Amino acid sequence: MTIKVLAIVGPTAVGKSDLAVHLAQKYQGEIISGDSMQVYRHLDVGTAKIPPSKRQGVPHHLIDIINVDQQYSVTQFVTAARRLITEIHERHRLPIIAGGTGYYLQALLDGLAFGGEQSTDRRVQQQLLERSQTQGLQSLWDELYQIDPLTAQKIAPTNQRRLFRALEIWNTTHKRPSEQVNHGSAYDAGLVGLTGDRSKLYQRINQRVEVMMQQGLLAENQWLQEQGGSSLPASHGIGYHEFEAYFKRQQSLPATVEQIKKDTRHYAKRQLTWYRNKMNVHWFQLYEQPEQLAKIESLITDWSF
Image (cartoon, rainbow, N blue to C red; front, side, top):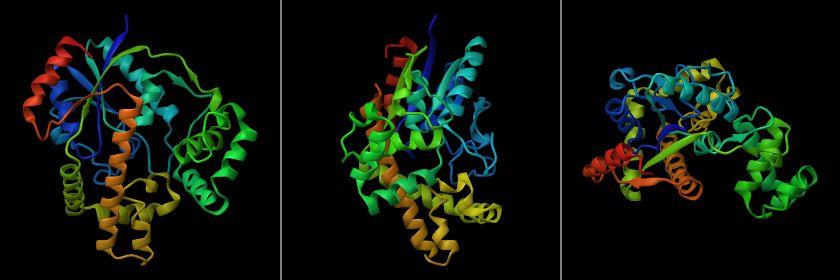
């Protein structure tokens, strides 16, 4: 029998965590975080972890599992999530993937397997960006063609996103992207997506960043700086890497806060684009139309995804 897995997806600051807790209570579920930053211990504010007081006794998994000097990869996530899904199912409970990184979720639900460890090291991404600016995308495409012509032939030299992804896989796993294997999903996945009016979403994002500052985001970054700052894998996430210029006295605190808001808005836009292009999601505007909660519950009760 195929295991049912519920996933709550959508852009940041849209209310996924709260919905996941509500649905876990209603359907006897346990929550698996799909976020690549919430795995880090001690980084609570900038990663927007749901505090224990708001978890309503619902078990949450893959939160606070590694230290800030450790890498975390899609391979680690998929391995851990598969194990947890099986364990939760064996407890006769519903596995619920809450939010997070679209690529991670796709790898889990679509059965992608990688020939080795795939790192999420932002330094590789930064190096590719710098090379594209100095050498041009055509040079990167030529390099990919030498490494993996099968993949290169499927990517236009002007498609920066796909070109970066392919070279990132090669640089972090030393395996050709064409060696990725899709084994098909072992799960009966239902995807509920939360979205809303973009201007209102951006207002929510801006407000949340302000709340994060009130909750101690600066102090959290000061602590991270003391642990090693930009040399740490955890320092490359949104809400953290923007402070590098501040600590170097190259940028004021208000300018840093505005940069976090801008980066978060851009990330939200990319998240929406990813889910709409890559996955079969049932979308709802819950924070604008709370009455849609009944439709979400009906969809899950009938499992009519």
